[in-house]
Amino acid sequence: MKPSEDRILITGATGFLGSWIISVLIDQGVPVIATDITDNHHRLRELRPELPEGLVDLRICDVTDSGAVENLIAETRPTGIIHLAALQIPVCREKPAAGATVNIVGHINIFEMARKYGIRRIIYTSSIAAKPRGPDNAPSNLYGVFKKTDEEIARIYWQDHDLPSLGLRPYIIYGVGRDDGETSAITRAIQAAALGESYKIPFATRSCFQYVGDVARVIAKAVQSDWEGALLSDITERVDSIDDVLAAIHAVVPGAKVTRADNERVSPAAGFDTGTLQKVIGDWQETPLREGVRETVKLYQEITEIQSA
Ligand SMILES: NC(=O)c1ccc[n+]([C@@H]2O[C@H](COP(=O)([O-])OP(=O)(O)OC[C@H]3O[C@@H](n4cnc5c(N)ncnc54)[C@H](O)[C@@H]3O)[C@@H](O)[C@H]2O)c1
Image (cartoon, rainbow, N blue to C red; front, side, top):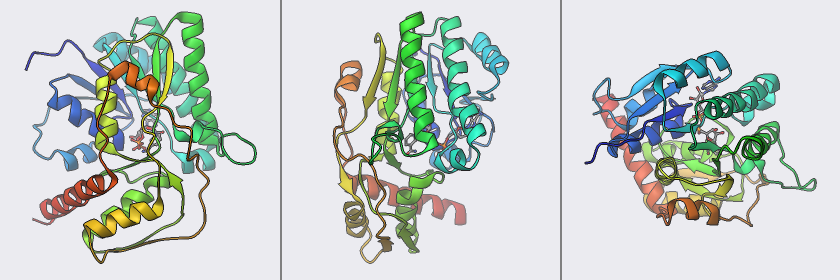
């Protein structure tokens, strides 16, 4: 494999998506600087127990601390940034000031340092939560409002400073390591089925259910691509219902004790467009729901086997 000229800084790297992106980039031979407020990389260890210690440059960096972000970027000089650090829906609801500080001020700190140090490949995760919905045709929680604000900040950095960025709007991502946030219920249901436990998904909805491996591969490819403008894109156009998810789980694990509640979670279920992302990275494969569930069940069973050995 040709040595990579890229060096990718990831924020929020001990989280669910960060761990999977690290795993993909390592396999591609791309050096990673993995940063978070904690150095507990248990999700990556669970996912890739065979990885040797020291393969990934692990650093503690709080994105709300602009001095710390600047020192890190000045020292490591990344060619691209994948900015994932965020507080999720429940924390933004309970601690709005903390939510705004991490999700908005942290976002500004990353953009400001990218501008200062000339880094022109920034991928950041917005969310489906930023999309208008419901009777007010607007985001329905503070997390969504913060993510919408992040999209606007990215737009202004292009307008005022010619700083390109690519904002991606993941929907409900599922897979091993998703243990936080309101929509982690999908992964919890798959995990329960894998381990023979009971679980009730606390809502019904129609939405996009995305396998984490697909999202990680898309982001890893995008951060090694070039583009101009403050781009914003969906990552999938495929819509399923919770009943489709349950059917996939029952097809993979016959007799699974997994059900759902009746209350409807309002979520946009139409109008998705992946064209912008496609222009940046070309075509990509989407794992069908049943395959994603199958892989997740297999991984949870392997992890449980390793942990109980
Ligand atoms: N998982 C999903 O379904 C989903 C859907 C839409 C959008 N997103 C977005 O994708 C990104 C990654 O999601 P995830 O599921 O991996 O979330 P996660 O909660 O697993 O990871 C977020 C990480 O951010 C870190 N963090 C929190 N405060 C920080 C700070 N001040 N400085 C540095 N790091 C900090 C946390 O420690 C955590 O490791 C987030 O921006 C999230 O909002 C995720």
